[in-house]
Image 1 (tube, rainbow, N blue to C red):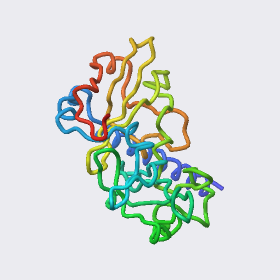
Image 2: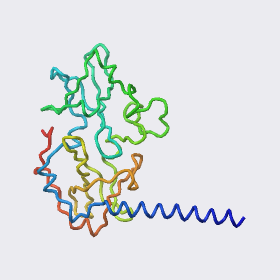
Image 3: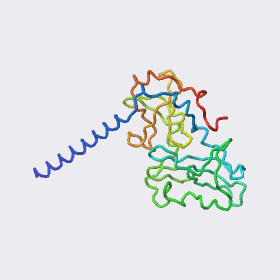
Image 4: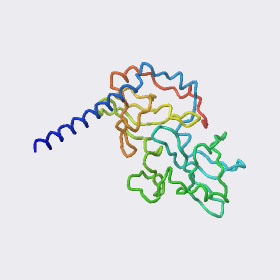
Amino acid sequence: MSIKRNVGVTALAITAGAATFQAQAQEEVIKPLGDWNYDDIYQQGGIRADNLMDAEVFGEEQEEIGSVENVLITEDNKIAAIIAQVGGFWDIGDTHVLVPWEEVELHEDGVMIPVTEDNADDYGLFVSDEYITEQDLSQAQQVDDDVEAGLGVWKLSDLLNDYATVGEGVGYGYIDNILFTREGDIQAVIVESDTGYGGGAYAYPFYGYGYGWSPGYSAYAVQYNEEEIGNMEAFDYDQYDGLLDD
């Protein structure tokens, strides 16, 4: 009995030690807000989530063929693919297609994809199980029309408009936007702060998987306390060179 109890205590100690190590590792990689500079983001420019969602979709002949319905993002914070609804004027009717981000080109008025009436089946949502799994959806998040993202992939709509918290779960505002580089990497998450914090939009580094956040959560924890965020300057969209801006 004592041997089993000691083994159990040892296992608990190892588990607690691993959790402490992980927490310390997370703290070490979280960028201090003092080192966080909007100027770099303004200069780099990129893509705003609110412009990408519902953006017009064009075919290879630059004809409008549909619109963006959702965006799939990997757990390392990169755009993996877009979900688009296309084909309303084709014989196949309205259908959803999945196009890997590397095949998406930014168009003057939206995005361009290599999908045609003849090859639409090649871009079916379940053609590849890299992003969406048809058989096992028990641990997945709904994308659109009962389509769900697989493990390790989340959809843009999982985070937009969620509550944002600081410190020990204190209400701070909501997620108003997400900024991406032209290559599809997340640059920042934009929080529209509550009037209790003065209101206004503030950009923060994004910390998702591994930092207490999951796509199924209704709130996103900004990895800073109230004192730290009190020194932030409001984010100026006018200084951000955003693609797809009207």
